[in-house]
Image (cartoon, rainbow, N blue to C red):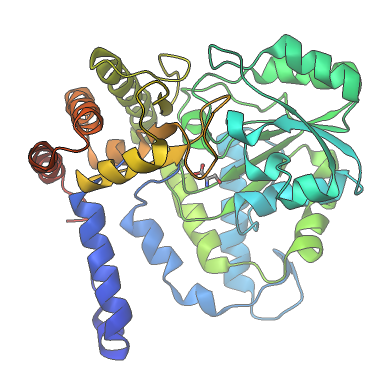
Length: 412
Ligand code: DSN
């Protein structure tokens, strides 16, 4: 990539960017929340828009000179609404956690009850973890998954009835099954709660039509833009029209100051890309690749939480192998595969050690990996874990992962 000016001004930073590009090109990226955004998105994010302050909303700003960013932000809003079938979109949240925070701020008072998915069962920090604002300032009750790795909707209903939450959150950062938004809305309606669907992980699958949409069920939909949606790092909130003004106020001036208009431009570009036919094909291929990886791992004697995946991710369950997620994620890095340690439901290990490794197919699918490549990755993973002490085996597996990267060049 052209870093001509940066190289002259700050060779240290330029050098690390070069090294990071090389790392991304020569390793297999299986972190389920990562992806490779397009050069078009990166150009928008690296543009002069970074210079502009634009507190407020398009056409209602607190600063002058916003004519161009108004148009760009409006494009991003309209594209988000159309792509996800929602009435209103606020594209200013800096991240998914801040998008969730704004929904909390709009709907709740400190101490109000929220029902969300437990983090160690696949939820997200901002869905009520005791160490996060959501768990510190609100009365959080949690649901999890059953032994099949699936949400038990009867259990969610029972908990909703018992705790009478004002808000129910569905959506996860580590859940491999289809989420039944209709069922969640029925549960929310039964207890008079609002429903927030956090689709950060599956947004690209929803956009591509390979996962049901929460539109028409959840009054509030939040997402990040950089996971399966393949945009720049950031967040979006969508909601029904009646909540639009309140949500906008919660984002600004409630949670944030000046919006990042360069990132909003990147979001606009990504949303356009995600509305194309080729993106639908991409989304379909992500799921086929994830299933091929899962099948390959099962065929190689590995266990997966909940068995076969239905979306872009899965969690290797290392319980019973005598190995931990922490150690095995490091071994995978040695063979050129990047993933993250993750708790499995009822994990006997701490969240820093864990008994699992989360794996996702979104990034490698962007590189053009297909099912046969995923089978090869499954072989590399299984054999790295089984032979984690054998340097010669690990070296030969590293050669295989490099060959796969060379077969599918990135940013060349
Ligand atoms: N950190 C993200 C993930 O990896 O899923 C969630 O915000």
